[in-house]
Image 1 (cartoon, one colour):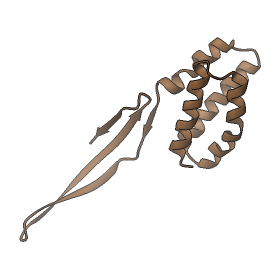
Image 2 (image 1 turned 90 degrees about the horizontal axis):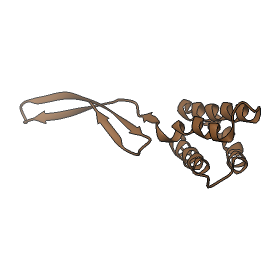
Image 3 (image 1 turned 90 degrees about the vertical axis):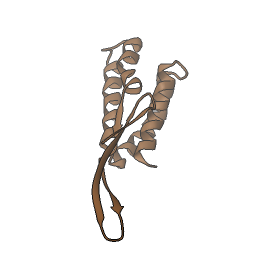
Image 4 (image 1 turned 135 degrees about the vertical axis):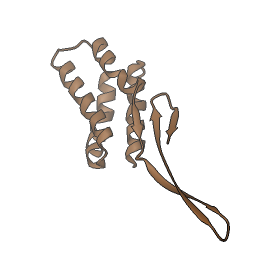
Length: 121
């Protein structure tokens, strides 16, 4: 499974927990087998996401947070996040049979938690 797909699956399930569609225990039971796949994925953004959630779960289990406070701490993980693709460089070739011009084009794509993509370059 691609790491981006894994990240979206985790966020989708986290959204369900935050919306009250699943209990804390249901969510953590779902997440437990996924955690290993996350760290095997080699994707640092997905690993950071799961590490942040696991830290909050440990604090909640220790009594540091109420469940309402836990939900408030986790909410930014699904409301606001950014996933950036590495900038790419491509070349535009234009001209005629006697002259060729090579122009460098650089751009990057950023996908926000709202599902909007921004292309810059």
